[in-house]
Figure 1 (cartoon, rainbow, N blue to C red):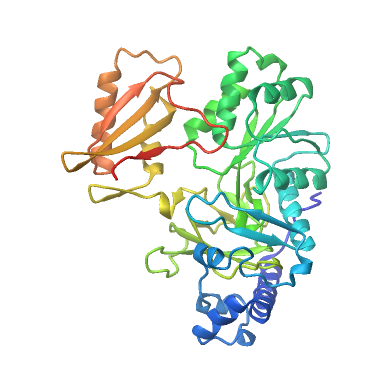
Figure 2: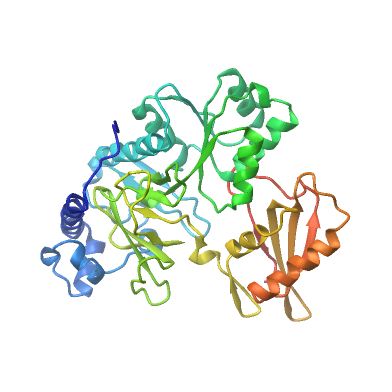
Length: 426
C-alpha cells in the first residue's frame, strides 16, 4: 500500500492539472508584478485561462526572469509568509534565489518521500546523505523527505571520504544519496580499503549530473548494491525529487499532480511530437512563494507516453541527455557530451570516465578526448583502441579529435558533479 504516491486515473489527473494551472496563473498574476506585466504584454487575461488546453498560449519564463527579480524573484506571497530560501549554484552572474512558504517546504518533503517509496525503501532503512547542505536544496531536501518517510537519516553531506566510509561501516547505511561521481568515488574507496564485506548498502539514489550506463554499472559493482535509481530535480522546482526511476528502469516517473511538463523545440519553442527529444518546460501546480509558469529548464529529454509496467500511474520522462547550454560547438558541429558516452558504450575495453579538452592551434579548434581504460584491461592495444574510437567519432559525430587512452583512476574524481569539458579556446 503506497502512503505517499497517489494513484490517479488519467481523468482525475487531468482535473488536478486543470485546477492547478488556473490557480497558479491567477495567484501569480494577482500578486507578482513580473507575471502581471508578462501576461499584459502577451495580451492574455489570466481569468480566461481554463487549464491545460490554454497552456501553450501562455508566456514562457526562464532563468533571466529569476535573476532580474533578485533577490526574491517572481514572489507571489507577502514576504512575511516566506519561511526559507534556497539558491542555485549560479555559474554566471547572481545566484537564483527561490523563496518557500511553509506549504512549499512541506511539498518539497513530500516529493522526496515519494522518491524513497518508489525506490522500495522502508522505515527500517538507513539513508546516508552525501550531498551538499546550506543554500543548496539537495542535502536538506533528502533529509526532510527521509524524515517524513520515516527512515533514519545519516546527514554526512558532501566530501570527507573518511567520515563517509566510517558511517557506511559503523552505522550500516543501506541507501546512499549522492551524485553519480560521488558514488563512483565511494565505490573505488570501498574497494581500495577492502571494506566490501563490511558495507551493507543495497540502494543508491543518484542525480544532479549526466552519467553513462558504464559509470552506473561501475559504482553498482564496486559498492555491491542491488539497484540504483536516477533522481530528477532542480532548485526552481523545490529541489531534488521531482522524478525517480522505478524498478523497471525505463524512464523516470514525475509527480504530475505537482507540476506539468511540456517538451518544446529549444530553437523555435514549439511543442515537439510525442516521444521526441526537446527542452523540458515546467509549470508548477502548488508552488506558492515562487510559482513557475512555462519555465524553460534547459534540460533535454522526452516524454514516455506509454503506461509503465510497474503499475505506477504517474507519467514518465526519459533520463536527461544533457542541457541546452551543455552543447559544444566544435568546428561548426554541435556536440553534446552524451554523444561521447554513447560511443564509449560500444567498447568493452573503455571505462566510464572521460574528459574533453578544447584548445585553438594555428587558428583551428582542436579537441583532446581522454578516456580511462576499463579496470583489468591491458594497455598494449591502447593505440589501436584510440584509432577505433577516433574513427567512430568521425563517422557518428562528424568530428576529428585526438583520442588518448589513459590508465584507470587517472582522471580527476569529484565529490559532486564531474567537470567533463575544459574549454581553453578563448
